[in-house]
Amino acid sequence: MLKYDIIVIGGGPAGLAAAIEAKKNGVDSILVIERDRELGGILQQCIHNGFGLHIFKEELTGPEYAERFIEELKKLNIDYMLDTMVLDITEDRYVSAVNTDKGFMTMKAEAVILAMGCRERTRGAISIPGFRPAGVFTAGTAQRFINMEGYMVGKEVVILGSGDIGLIMARRLALEGAKVKVVAEIMPFSGGLNRNIVQCLDDFGIPLLLSHTVIDIKGKDRVEGVTIAKVDENLRPIPGTEIDYSCDTLLLSVGLIPENELSKKAGIKLDSATGGPIVNESMETNVPGVFACGNVVHVHDLVDYVTEESRRAGKNAARFIKKEMAEDCKIIETVPGNGITYIVPQVIRTENLQDTLDMFMRVNNVYNNSKLVIKADGETVKTINKRHLAPGEMERIKIDLNSIKNKAISKISVEIEKEGV
Amino acid sequence: MLKKEMTCIVCPIGCQLEVTVKSNGELEYVVTGNKCKRGIDYAINEITNPTRVLTSTVKIKNALLKRLPVRTNGAIPKVKIFECMKIINNVEVKSPIKCGEVIIKNILETGIDLVASRSM
Image (tube, rainbow over all chains, first blue to last red; front, side):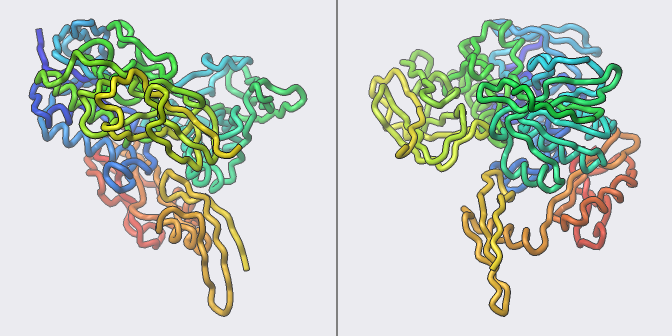
């Protein structure tokens, strides 16, 4: 049986950064398993620029960002398998996988790093009624067709969802000659970055309809049109506000879900708010020796943050292999308070931290001129003024370790306080 | 005096900028709302000569994929974007290509090159 110190599942930005960092921290025997025909993950289809501002201090395209890590992985002689599907992981870290070359194989790892990324929500997830013609794509699928396979997906397009992928695809389709009629967003605000609304919609004169959703798809063999309606504050369509748009294509950019089928099989506990594994300060799951990083843990908005998180996972997996990790410690739980959807990590062992505690979170609504209040067992340890908070922008908070260390704290909470309402 | 509001697109923060154009003999631009210096340059450019980095794909033969991603290695005038796309759509290259390799030099006399954004 093949044996490795670390097996990394997934060869996208998370898996690449984790494997490289583990190697740099003294672990020699590492294998990265990737199901696609090449490394790089979804970055390879994200041909637009804007990646790497934090890590490289320059604006790269997705493939350029990926290539830097792929080159480094190869230079470090880290093993990888392509076209290989992991079928099962056990609690004692046996990994079963299959490919057309070697058939079925079972491998043993001292540590496993989960880096499977996420999937797009589909039409089924949001239950759009109507016929089921061809021409309904998730935005990422259309992106892969156009940017990698060389197939145009349609001529007249309506996009549902204004997250960054939806906005980027609106521009991409417009550049390739399609007429993008409208982007509809069910929420009263866009989930995408402001700069993308400017350079992807405004630049091309594409209208954005907030508080609107698609309530019907028409056409039998191919999409012939969609019906869009305004929604009320409970996100229910308002009768009488329906508008018909003729189109041959509907793109869905309606959210991402961490892909954790394998994690569940290994007995890993998931957080219902993130959809990803519950992790500690070292990015380790509840199963000892199984780490997780990137979009499989929680969906990030910038790949740079995925890289940072994955480097931490790789470094800590190396510490686990070298038995440098403090295991039997008192546990501090993080608790999302008023206005906060989730906090990662969910569990903290201060013994394994160096100077600061980094916490990542999302808020549940748009807030202006408010404060993020961090409390340890109900006592305020830090307050951060925020001009603007939005669900589409992940918040990162650094806390000085001295303010929580050796204080027998059991819970750290974060909540939003509105200023001078 | 002319006032214009805009969203800065230099980085993901997306500052809300306000540009005031004063013309007392010479044109003068006053930018507010920016969190960094790059916002000032962006705002003045956006009023005088808006530019964008263009990313797209070209056909590639004998390669792993059917399309090679490309980018302009600097910002080009916004008004030339669709003209550039016409040129890009007629290009076909052959593998192997190195990341950064020039595909079209000085595209539309902009002084900017179209380069490959991955090796293939």
